[in-house]
Length: 175
Image (cartoon, rainbow, N blue to C red; front, side, top):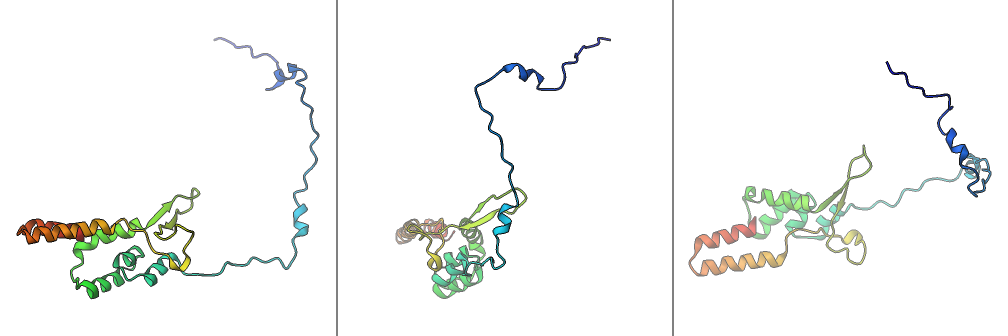
């Protein structure tokens, strides 16, 4: 059994007393009155709620007649009605994955404080000069130029008699 001699040097930090004067003046701390600001609060000080408005997704449905904007807002029923009225779509199973992608791609989820839910923020396409307010529209991952090019490729293939290629091109645009 080895016995260790720890000595009777005292508590932690006693060895710092030998550093001498470091040239720093100690400033005496004044006591802080933590209750000082409470006497200044008056009885008529009330919290005022900000003016209520429509959420951005509500504006998207009201401002646009494009089915993609309605899907991005989560209003799939109105998007299906628009597609049915505009281009007579009746079978929506093919579009389900694209609609989900459009909906999920229109919002941004930012993690918050631990233990709290994350914040969902809308991605806006017309916010270059500031928040558009009630004129907001969603940012979608689809670009019109890409869709037009796909339709043109489908027409060229159809006119050339390549019906399978035409079908693939049109299905790519729809998906």
